[in-house]
Length: 241
Ligand code: F6R
Image (cartoon, rainbow, N blue to C red; front, side, top):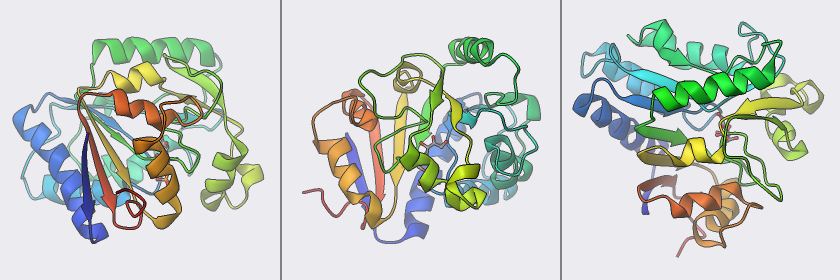
């Protein structure tokens, strides 16, 4: 595991975007695993800026997103589809049909999970970008007695709904369920880039990276990945030795 700590958000964004950009430059056909939430917003705006400046192209790339709320239509302002469109896709030259996100409005969510796993099988992720939930979730793999390998429907933890209430107005309005890539889907990526910011995440960063590997903290399974790169701001990294 390679842990890098940055003194400013700007430097963290540049380093994370730089790693994604160099993957695209080395392999223009690469498959990128993407995340939503507040963590990657600055990373996406750097990527958009550099893409528009012609430093690299997404024209031949593909993206697969980690998760989507169940029951939200794609055009709902808080769907992860809308998020990706607003924060990244609208600003880059990635062809629309090359961006995969689970369909949260599907009438058959189980079949949507199977369809998504087939997409992941056909398009192995080269670099997976991850954020970290306060409870140790990655994607929406919430702490539990057991974790699932494949894409599945998950009941969101009350803590997760509370954390995401800021986007919806109140925790009650946050959907109760989501579709998420499973742990095997995430851990299969060639390289994993975990980005975490803020002192409120310092304790979970410590548990995830230095604590026991346990399903109580799904991110702790990242310790088993042979190519894990962690990028933190100083606050998120303050409890690491
Ligand atoms: C989002 C996702 C989640 C977030 C996590 C952190 O696609 O998979 O695991 O990365 O909840 O969210 P933020 O970045 O909003 O703190």
